[in-house]
Image (tube, rainbow, N blue to C red; front, side, top):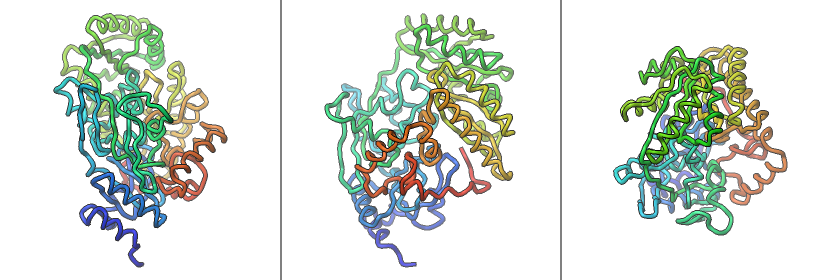
Length: 477
């Protein structure tokens, strides 16, 4: 087969050390943290916005699909090249370009690791609020593409609440700037439009993000329950008292056993569920809120409410939460992480529904999730080496998401739609709304070359998606 001319063009743009197309190299880029797989035809690593622009022009000229990739930690197939083509890896564009503490802003390239930004400003008393569980690896560019969240989004919001401006490359190679150094800029909110668009309209090459001052006092509490219903009911009781914790996380009994065996964080092994609650603010206000939270938990029949007595104890509790996925790997060779959202008043019935799905499928399902905003994360354990298990796991996930829609919620809160949930978008939105989204997409990408087959159902991209079954032995995170 002759060597395509566009591959030669890519080598000229990024240089031979910034280009991959050997099969053994491409295999490393055919998956993310979800269950779908597809291999790109080449991977390029640009070093500047200008190189990204040249890559986009080359792809458009030759009609080749383009998919952006950060760290590959996504969980919905957003970075999977479902139609082959060019994968643009941003690992070389990993500089913090500017830190402006006076205006509480930073300018970063898309390959900057989430946690590295907070570490860069920690000594000055600042941090970057969005904190996905993968924050030690995931990148700001990927967070912008998926509108990522994390445990502390109850108080601070998701990525879109912390992005003021973007630089992005359109499919024709045009480099555009959206937003400004301050919020609420005039004109259409293009920054908000691109944040969460999953790379289907543009490739982000810079972001101006918000930095926040670290709170004076942080208090972390652990409420322990003998029933899941009591644990879930407490969430509404806390918010009814006009308290918004910085984080309000729930782990059920299944997850507690796995996490404690791996981390030894002090979680009770005999509990049906726990709430991990974090309060932040001025010392006096936090002390008052902590007492109200304690009373709310006891009113909802918590058998015990603990407070972390030291920073080390607090960090250990969070280590258990943040390292939960690794803990699961000790128990099951494969697991499938979903995310759906329900009103917080529907958490208890949703957990019961998940329990029923677990029984019907014969698969263990654990729950560890952002309870404060009803953001569920059912984790389905399976063995892809066993015939039919992957199909059962996927059906279980979709049954849960359909219930989330029926309960008045959403099929995603932070993982994105990708190729995993694209067929459920027609359940979430009316046809007229989806058609409006398609028209917006086509204004940016009339040839439908940027991340085709993602986010929106129907059209040429989705119709041509190839979703091969999971190969036994493939890791699923």
